[in-house]
Image 1: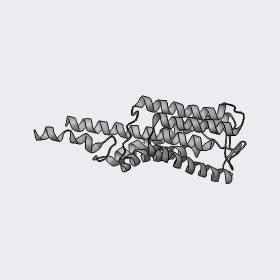
Image 2: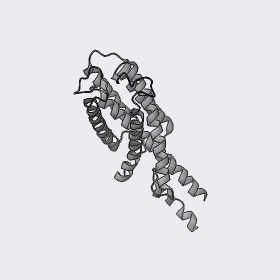
Image 3: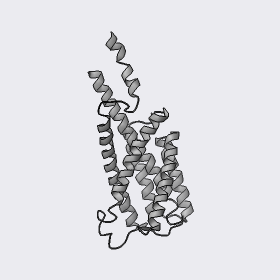
Image 4: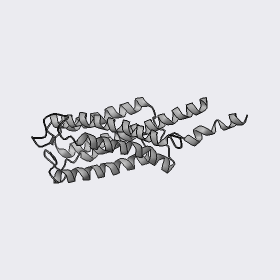
Length: 225
């Protein structure tokens, strides 16, 4: 009887995210590695789209192929993706506001598809001017947040990520690491913060889903025991 009474308390303690397990450190490492490789893959794909449209220009002696050109971009994006993906569920847990909106993998995959579409639009679709392009991408990015996130923490982190990533991009361009064609926002393109915002929301959703999946697995194993 005592065992039956103790059973329902496990999911409550665990919550929608993993909170206290024996191999918590290993779970964080596994999630970080998965997020890193997802970030590397997306960076390769999205960087190829930008290079094909000459939106991003790298030195001619560097750009020999998608894998050798700007070799530092995929690892940096992978590291940032791992940090963002781990930060989102951690922030939700710290604020005591577990994110439960559209928490299934099909929704996460749609979010990734929309993010790739937004990036594709920035490189492929021709607009009358940069202001129109920036406003369109800003609306699409906010629409992505509203459709797949809708959390205050997610919006706040997305804004912070967009600001920091744009600042880092400004510094890299200023130091001649790479450059943008027709920069209209200091050294970069004005729509770049929108891409970073959408990317932060996307990786945050992936990180939340990975955290929720691990918690469900642990809860099921504990229930079986």
